[in-house]
Image (cartoon, rainbow, N blue to C red; front, side, top):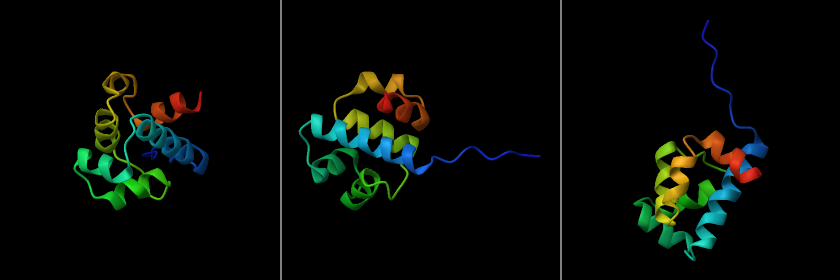
Length: 88
C-alpha cells in the first residue's frame, strides 16, 4: 500500500507564503519585478504569496535566487523545511 505524502495544511501554506513574501519585500522588489526575474507571470507570483497556489520546488529556488538569497536555497531542500525555517 502506498501512503501519499502529507499535504501542507493551511497554517503551513500561510507560513510558506509569508516567508516568500518577506524575502521579496526584503529584496525591495515589487511582485511584478520579482515575477520578471523569475520568468513567470505576475499572477502566479501573486497566487503563491496569497496562498492560493502551492509553489513547486523550482518556484521556491527561483524565488530565493531572484531575491538574492542564494545561501538560503541550500538550507531549504524542500518546501516543508522552508516552512519550518520560516516559522521559527
